[in-house]
Image 1 (cartoon, rainbow, N blue to C red):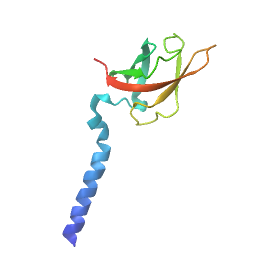
Image 2 (image 1 turned 60 degrees about the vertical axis):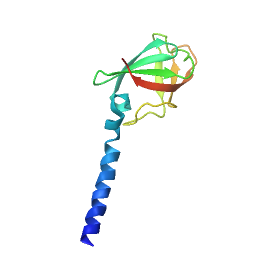
Image 3 (image 1 turned 30 degrees about the horizontal axis):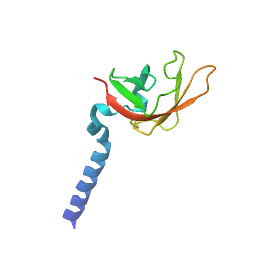
Image 4 (image 1 turned 180 degrees about the vertical axis):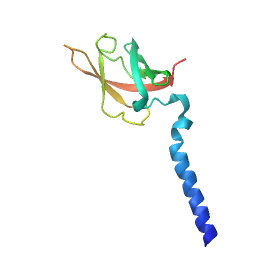
Length: 113
């Protein structure tokens, strides 16, 4: 009985460890919301996001993103929070003073080369 409990505890610890290690397995491809620092537009379908460790990520959108290249553009996100990695399917509202907001859906997130 004692051996079975020890085995169950070990399995539980391995599962918990794997859950917490997930960002490590994601490697450099994980841009967590709480670590995001700044962004710049490359063109109307691509931006480079930098994190607090000075790593750059190339984010591409499914379609051209209206307002993205404006110097006073503002990104607003509703679903990317906390420890979540930015991923395909997440969306931003991109707006600028005097312009209507555009919804831009992420197609890919890759470590910048």
